[in-house]
Length: 296
Length: 324
Image (tube, rainbow over all chains, first blue to last red; front, side, top):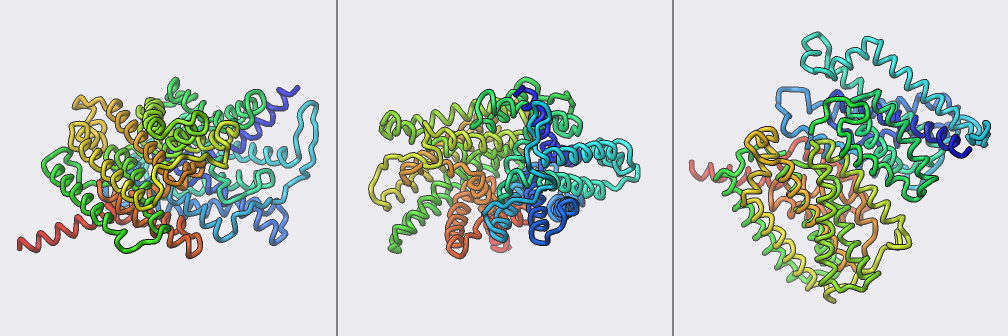
């Protein structure tokens, strides 16, 4: 029953991708820009978690929220210093907005990678696991405790995020700003605060994803690039700006990738994502969820 | 990035382009006299690599600065160009006379195929897709050990045996690229590209086939990158997947942004300054990418026209004072 094993392991990878991609998608939904430094939130989360837990010997469970806090603070700082000039103030950015966002976030990503490389060092090190890494088999499915526990944490986070967006007042404000920034401002919602909130959530979730994966992937300064590329594929697959679409697409990509790695070729498993991306762009440019809003 | 040039193809723009072209010629002429300073082979090598990056920067600027399409794959296409030359030497022992044109055509075809999917898309989609393409083509090349020898790289035959002739050869290459882009931007196509950059919907409403012209610009830009990569391979006699690292793309972008986006001379000035600076910072302690990423953020945030724009402003102020 290799098939079942692959499906479950693929779904678990999909959950970690979803934690990254949801933040990216939310930022796009509100600001219409892509954050090319999103992988570095992942990296910062993995490093904060591994560093604090190993050097101070704090229980990993208490370190997890600290990693999320680290990512959220980074998100807030990035928003305040680099992204806020895009929409705050009187100057019209309509013509240069995309360009500015691409150049600045891409440069930020390189800056963070090389800063960590210089300050902490290029060699990878492992974070402590939350649970025994020993393999357990549930019927035909081979898992380890870390994967099981952290996928439980991710499911909990994704569901609470969904409830937060759908039910809470802040979540409704986020929805309103995403639909119409100007209209939301007229209705008394502060778009600036809402955008800052979104960056904090996106940074925190990506950092948590990094922290949860750090016992499995051995964080090194450039660890963020592959999860980030996966989440670019996912947001295109799910339709940019659609939170549900990207959660769904993340699970699909995780499963498809794990089939591809075993049944077709392990070496080229990362190329498979691009193949999906290009096929989607050609055949279903509105994404799987069929959301409107893609500009063609 | 440059709001000042939004009057596409007007007389003002043509005059500015002409001025830009002449300053490029002056910069290259000054470069011709540099070897008189009795430079070491090492310094010459650095300048040659800087000029290779200048060609890549110019072709990225053709797409980003003149057409507003932010591709993330210039370094990847340079790597592919280099690998076409390397592979055809490794497997078929073709001479450079055949393999370099093959690299130009090959990257043009690949660029057109990628362009067919991405030029229909706007803004972030194009950057996203080209970024994934760049990373994944690098992974494919470094994983296909049986064809490309993976991370070890491939040997490429050289054309000349001393650095000085390579130096002048690369100056000629930069000049040819400059002349080609100048000719392109003076033609009707250049006007269309500027119109697409400044106002895509407006251009479309005037009957410009925006997808077609974006595709043309994308193909030309990719092919120029591939050509530059092939030439670099022949200079360094080695192509490796490291040529296609995202960090290289970052270096190219920082050259264009610091030098001045949307100009002919800017990318060349930027390439030489950034690369010399990066070698210097590497000697200090490998901090070049930290410094350049930071400088790029500052430039993009506060000085959006780069060094070239600063020079233009200075010239204008001087002229005004002169008239008074």
